[in-house]
Image 1 (cartoon, rainbow, N blue to C red):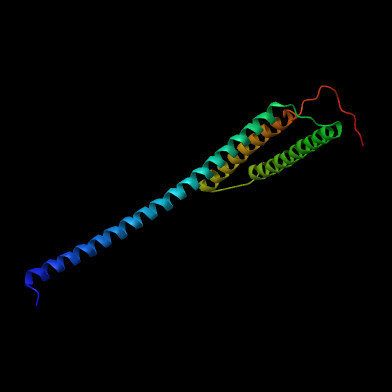
Image 2: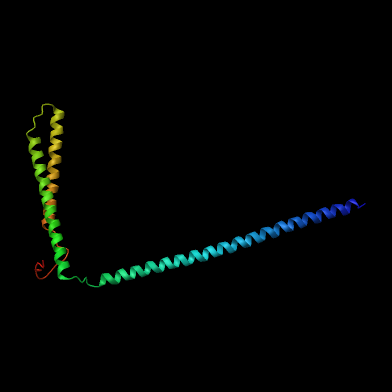
Length: 161
């Protein structure tokens, strides 16, 4: 039979071996996770670099294109001017119609007969609102009439078709 002291030492040695195995396993797991994180960082770094390079390239191309004059043929130029003029006329017509509608509403409100003080106050507020809208519409019409063309052409373009 073994002595109690020897048994106690053997138990301590067994416990220390178990702790050593646990520490080694923990170290291996830490090293493995470090490798995985390093690989992910490398991949992320490459993708960030590629994205940055692509953004820089795109910016460079856009700046280069903006420094060059726009080359269009006569037909395209005519189409741009035609579309621009058509839009300007449609905006002017729409603003003019809205102005006429506001004038009609204003005339109707001014001819409205109200007897109570609250009604008179509401009528005055509505008339003032309509006058403000009318003033803004007149400003919009002025802006449309003074609108500068997108493309400034020195010579008039003949109609091609």
